[in-house]
Length: 256
Ligand code: NAI
Image (cartoon, rainbow, N blue to C red; front, side, top):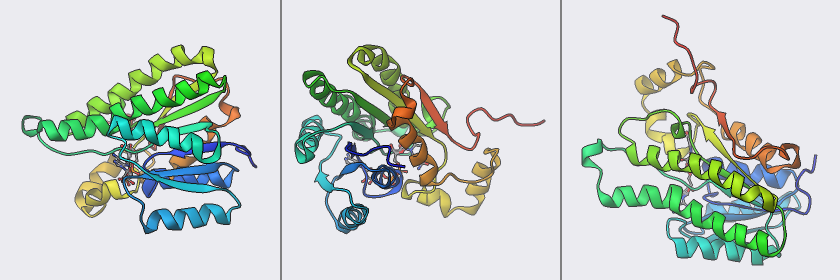
């Protein structure tokens, strides 16, 4: 099924993990892909080769999305690369762990600028382009179950993902008249490098799995499938929503 024939997608932070899976899934279904990461390395090279092997175009644009100037240039360069842009997946994100009273301003800025400010100005650049070209668009933000549920010792991360929740809700109303849809995907615990400490700690991992009704970590492809749905015309009437991909974690009930 080629849901994304003649479409171009930009996926931020797509050298590894969920972003890589989203890029590959969209390419598999017909999209040309703009990959992004802070720097171009062999992972980017391999991904380009993989996507080109599927018969699609791919280009890697290095940019640090935590810097508004760089994210604006990234979106502009992505539009210029293949002459259009239809799908923006704001995936790049990070977390830092610390007791609240030890969080430094630098840590706070790093998390908020990457997870929220960069997304804000990336979307703004994309919307200006769609608006001036009278072009439809679709935006997917990689949020987290922590836009909804607490995560002690990750205060800035929760604040950034909570911000993404309201950004999505707010922009859905403002962008609907422009024929632009925006949705969030909220992964639970997914097997990616961001969770390497957890995956290496058997005791902690068992505790996490205890809280997941489906008793397993999520796979990157579980997330990419939902991103592809939201990016596609099958989600034509979906905007301003968050889709959780969490094996039941967020709303689970613990039997007493
Ligand atoms: P990851 O750490 O494996 O990949 C994140 C990618 O973003 C990396 O390639 C990294 O280099 C890139 N990135 C980070 N800061 C960047 C910047 N300033 N500019 C450009 N690229 C940058 O993480 P993962 O797990 O794939 O996470 C992707 C998204 O999913 C993040 O937004 C994360 O918060 C979210 N998420 C992940 C969950 C998980 O369990 N893995 C759970 C909930 C949300």
